[in-house]
Length: 312
Image: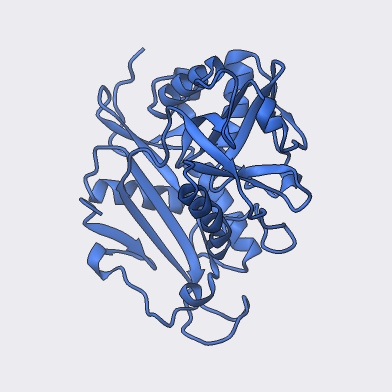
């Protein structure tokens, strides 16, 4: 972390170099934890960092905790305030990425979820683009997406991301930018760490929640923006692999990925092989919204520093 002097760990703000866990920690050994990725965007005109859909991220973290039998001693409002305070303490006036992690902190041998100590860490660090946002070349992964009855995809479980790591490395080592994963039934699920949308015959479609997807905050944002601002109602349904080859546009999305148009899948061009118009429009709209420049969506943006006079 280039300029993060402090982190929040188990009830207190501490110097970042003290943010360590034992090698015997249960969450480290067995992946028994869950996390969120939360972006904050710097608005130069407002001199403000806006944390995007902060409450929704923590609502999802608390749902993940419930699935993993983790009991955090913080309310939603306390988590929101802790997050803003951490950015202020680090005096970060740039795009940032917050990572809250709730995990089993007991130092014991034995795989289980019950009767273990629950710990919490929050970090904040500068972050630019996670993936290329001007045109991704994707490959369909040979690794299938984990099933809800194996490791629940609707929770951001730390250990589950080994599944994503297999797919991401396979894609990168095969010359692609990103992977697209299928369910065990062979339907499109999501990227290695992103939800996916396709434009097919003028209709915007995305895999349904039953397709072992993470119910993404950015996914929800796009569905709302596409309908309210551009007139596209998103259809949630099963999507076959070959529809990736015939779609007019495809884009991946997520807190890290933001909105990342796809220009080819398995060496086949998407549309004309260039970033499509819908993807461009959504990108432009999204970046205005997350930086607090769109008045209709200002309630999605939590300001970190003292409130500023809003511009028209």
